[in-house]
Image 1 (cartoon, one colour):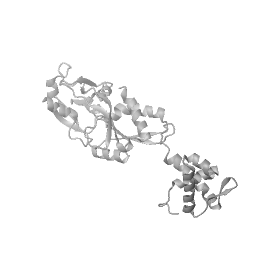
Image 2 (tube, one colour):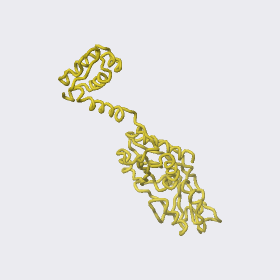
Image 3 (cartoon, helix red, strand yellow):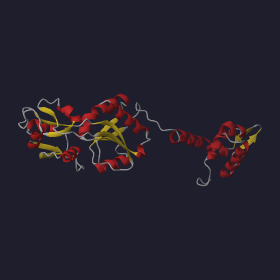
Image 4 (tube, one colour):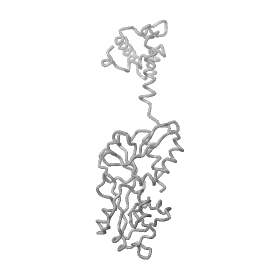
Length: 304
């Protein structure tokens, strides 16, 4: 029997005849006519070069050749039904999968506590891994599956094969300073004090421009940048110990308000807003585990 030349539906015919011992009952099980079933039996006999089933009184009894392959055929069909053709499902309670999220340090600080708490409640054996985004590597990771989701603000993603879903719209940006910053005017941040003070700017790896820089350029606002850092969380140490100012997303300003030495001020110009999204590759759009993760992240961030 040449696998490439034979009709694998004959295995279903074999199974039906083996279990019913009747051509008519087998045809009913497979929802085909009796002539079609008789024709299929003839093909089965030719394929195995053996009668396979012989009429004995009122039943079709298997030959020794048929009995010798019966267990193997039934096992093949059982596994095909349970592992190949059954609709894939995901049970978070039983999963020990490790999910990888691509997030900036800001997104990790603002969103990860909610996400991991929800994950531990719904999938107590699952694990979460966060990695920092670099646009090109992130797109490669999403495509290969080494990254399940990217969560944050990603204006640099140009890959046509990804889907994006908005989770929330950031309310904007604020400015943080040491509460004793000498550039404040009677404790207030003005356009003049913003322009004259030294600043620390965040330049995320892989991005040539940040949204706040583009907005300031649009408005003709300038700042005196004396320090550049690659992430936001270092500001929690830098700002209290220097006279520098920093423009930060409001997601981080809520954390800064808990720091006694830091004050949060509204910007002295119109603040831009950005949409926080989750991004995944089209290859995993129908993957049950990925769909569960996306739903969980959406629930966690939807009420912020």
